[in-house]
Length: 331
View 1 (cartoon, rainbow, N blue to C red):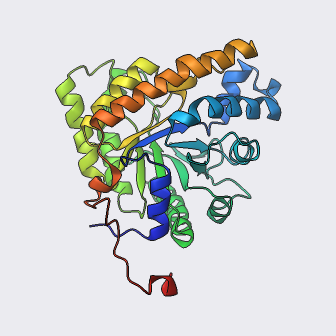
View 2 (view 1 turned 60 degrees about the horizontal axis):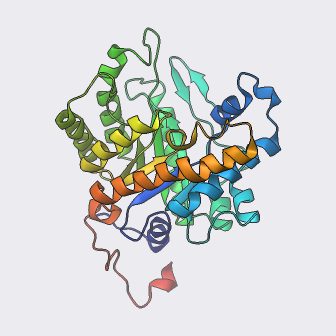
């Protein structure tokens, strides 16, 4: 049974709902969002435009989210300062710099310069998140990526802050992301990644869906692949959306939650069509109706099928850790 410290428990409570389930909305995008807003001309997108986009999304979706994931540059400070993030909604803050560094055939994550876990804790953040581009079969990149994740994990331990680790597989030479050949590899990559990162002191695994629904349509097999992810991960895990369309993601969420996931941490699948509507009035209406309804429907799926985070850890909600009368002396 995993022993959790009181700060990590409190953070997990803040980013889940009353039933111990994650309905996290991810709005920490930077490079991909700038490309969406710039429509082929990213240099035309200024700081205020990015901030305004994130604030509109946060205002529309925070009421239906257990937590919002924001970045330190354009979102986290602004959402608090503008009183847009409700006090009852948890705040996750990302730690990685946008983009990546090449390493042979691999891709390496860099941490955001000038930003630390201690600062996330100081600003009232509920948890920290790190994105790793990860191929478990690339021996030159894996140790470096794991070292970066361990650095963040240890900093989270020092600040007693929950650590959510996200991994995303990518293609290497000779592979195409939309091909049936890469789709056939996807399950193995996701499951082995879950197994490798489980050696790190993380608290929540933000996982990709371990299949491509364009090529695998057997419901039973899809649930079983998710169960294999669940078996490989001793930690609670949530499903990322990776920019797929909403209907595809909704199907993935059901399979993942039936297979043991504790909820979602979804971004573009929910809101990508809305942010590019040019008319501000129409855009805000779309975000507050169509996009908000999407998140509410995903929340219903999570509520029906997902596994509470404490059950994944074999903990009881009324006794998440042992407490002694002198605990505060050594905390």
